[in-house]
Image (tube, rainbow, N blue to C red; front, side, top):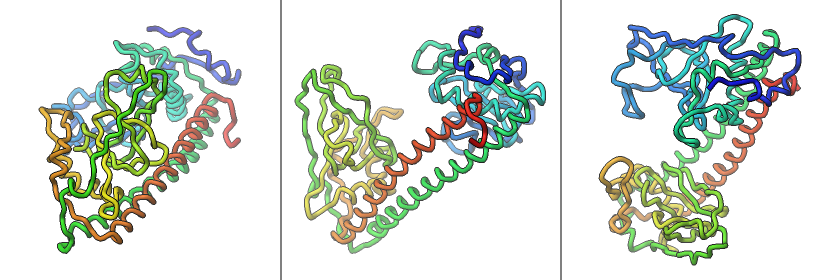
Length: 400
């Protein structure tokens, strides 16, 4: 699809003194290949930047050969055109190889600062502008950006001196935002490590007795009485103990034939499909009376015997994850349902109540800080996106 000027209404706000032109007039597609490909790192473009991949691990898909991979450096702008929903654009800070599925462009002259255009396109990704120019067989999945569409995309560019000012300004502001994000993530990591240390102390204490799970907790069923005209909040769960999320509300008539159950604050929730990936969580207050499908298991420990927060901490430990793993069966791939009845036959260590309370308090602190941190990070992301959009479109001057 060749793009025409009427597609670019959002550029009406660009200052009149700025130039507008198509990508192809200032950039060219860089598809340099090298026979020396084994001497360069493999780079991967993610929403958090360009990262060097570990080809010695089995993580992700790896090519049989990198002979057709393209060599890029810090003068290239890299696009992931394959998926305009989760794709991204960035500039590498080292030389390396990228998949031929990516698009790399280089500036034709020094009148353009590539980092200014990088920030402009990051804004286009975030605001879903590029999505309108995609092509593919699915509208909401693998909706990609073709090379011709990219080459004909309009870009604004002020004088090079102002571009440089914008880049310096955004680099400084975004680094401060990144530092705040990293600090929050590090605090969350430390809290989780403290929990795991306490669990490890329990696991290595030979004086702690082990008891079958079926003797200390109950499998809870709270089936909903579906009303077609009432709205319901379905939930899903992240893997590796990273919590619960809500889907948009649905009316009872939209829930299909699946069976659902209510969940309550404080419940221990385990995914029946992805328990082997650490999909286990404590239900927090905001998810009280939400509904979970029959594929989730709701558990509650016996009063005075076992605390749900201790159980969560145990299941995110190495031993607990191993139990979830060995009791999940399937024919292949990620389809490995948890055999909950078999899991309940397993024995786990039950420490004294004082130790459980200590772990519970740390778990509650972890969830509280994590929730507060998520809110702060969302605000920081909104600020970052707004900042990039405002200055690359000339809506506000740098420093304002």
